[in-house]
Structures are given as C-alpha cells and as structure tokens.
Length: 386
Image 1: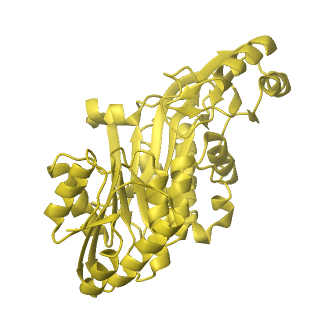
Image 2 (image 1 turned 60 degrees about the vertical axis):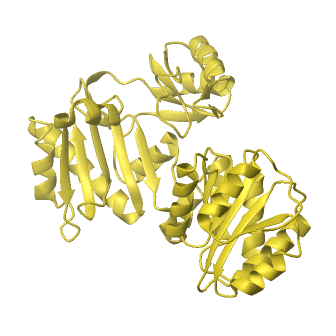
C-alpha cells in the first residue's frame, strides 16, 4: 500500500524526521489562503498523486504571491498525471537548498535483509541514477539482529557528509527512518530529496512510503491512510474474498487455482500469441461461492473478450468449480465465451455438470484450451462442447 507525500510527512514528523512547513489543500482558494498563512516569501505547490514524475509533468510549481498560488493551484488541480487526476496539493515552504541527497530503506530479497541506499545525486529519479550511474548509489545491507545503532548510523552518515554537525543530524535521521520502517511494517521508505539548506540543516522535502499489505492488520492507523485507485480497490476487494487478483493489459481473462499454475497459464497464452488480462488465483478452496466472486471480478474488466479457466483438482474439487461457474452465470448476464479445462479430483463429475450448459466449451488439455480461447475471440458463439 502506497501513501501520499503529505501522509508520509506526517509519519516523518512523528518519528522526529524534519520536514518543511506545509498545508494540504483541495481548492485554489485554499491554496491562496495557505500561502498567506505559512507566511513565507516563496512556496512550492505540489500535486498529491500516487506516482512519480510530478515535476516533469508540471505538477510542482514555485509561487511568490497569493495570486500566483491561486492560479498555479487552479492549473495543478485540473491536471492528470500519468492518467491520475489531481484532487489535492501541498503548499510547502520553499527551502533555500545548498545540496540534495537521496536516502532510502527497502527490502532486498537477495540478501534477505533491509538495505540502506544513499546517494549524493538526490532530487531526480533514483531509478535513472541507478541505470546510468550505479556507482553513485551506496548500498548497505542492514543486519536484522543489529539494526542501525548509533555507531553504524554515524559511520553511514559520514559517507555523505563531512561536517560533524551535518553527519550527526544525518545519523539521527537514519535511525529514525529505520525505526519507522520496522515499527510500521513498511517495505520501502525513501526521502528524495533530502535537502541540505544553506543554513546547514537537513530537511525531508519529499517522502514515499510503501507498506506491506499482509501486515496491515497490525496497523489499523496505517490502513486508514489508504486512498486506493480503482485498480487497487478491486485488488483489495479480491483479497478480502480470498482471491489473488492482479489486472493486466490483455483480453484473455484467466481463472486458475494455484499461483504457479496461473503463471504457467499466462505463459502459454503469450506463447500462442495472446495476452492475459489478469492473474487470478482462487487458491485451494472448494467453495463454489469463491468461483462466483472470481468470475464477477473477471467480467468487471471490459477488455476481457474470453475467459480461460484452468483447474488442477487436488484440494480443489472440479465439481465444486463447475457448480460455482454455473451459479456465476445464473447471476451474471454475459455472452463472453468461456473455455474450461478441468483435471484431477472429481474431474468427471465437474465435466458432466458443465456439459449440460452449452455456454461452456470444455477442453482436455491446456494447449487445446489456449487455442480454443484465442480462436473464440474471433468466433465468440458456441453451440456445443468438445
């Protein structure tokens, strides 16, 4: 789960990470009033959207008067950044910057630990720095049994800062950032840029935090911060029903039991020239109602032109899946063709149920099912089963 910059800064403040003066606004009038209220010569207006590249898209603008703030806010609030509408913006004190740095903590699965990343090339996309100038990024694995005690924090801080006062401030910031990551079950926390002002202080000018969805039950305060877009809301609903669902860009809807089998199913669709519309794993349940909910999820995607169902019956019974499919199409009106491959536990019973309903086209193997599914995109009407 991702959160907005203003929410990240609230957490930063709670963990003693310094941030600039700022106010969240939803209208141009609020932005103009906020500019006067924070009482600064210049302010930065920053669109609040859950994506990067705001500055390049025009979503970050400097203003020096109430009138400028009103006009800039009006433009920003009318924008879409990477197809995401801007509903709010942050009016922030413009800081006199001497240098910009990057500091981030994330989970590194290769080392099975948190990794600290730092760079003196802050203020731009860290992915771009990593691709073009990888030597400019310092990567330090953090031993989970040690964490970042004061002596290590100072050692790391001196890799970026030579002045003792700045290094001490950076060391405190690193320890706070690590506490935030660990206590809130975050999978990524980053500050970009971490600004060194001309007065010699460090300020987190922007922040991004991503939380582990599987740990949100431990943090109701964090879960309340969620502002999910349509896709994320669908994924959240699916998870609440015990379904793993990730929408993609294709037109072949997939329903599979088991993550590995789902990946293999998507691979073979690509192999035969198709494009999967989703990853959907109903898991090992034999509950027909889960199949009903899964089918409803699939058919909410208007790009889906055919549904390919690939079930390997182990714990999951094929006849329960068949019963769920039949019930789903009692509740859903749709002429989208459905190709079904059932094999394993209660396979014969499941096939017998589906053979009574001509809308389902049955297949013995996955390759045959894939070919039938792709062919059905061009010939979507069926009158018999195979």
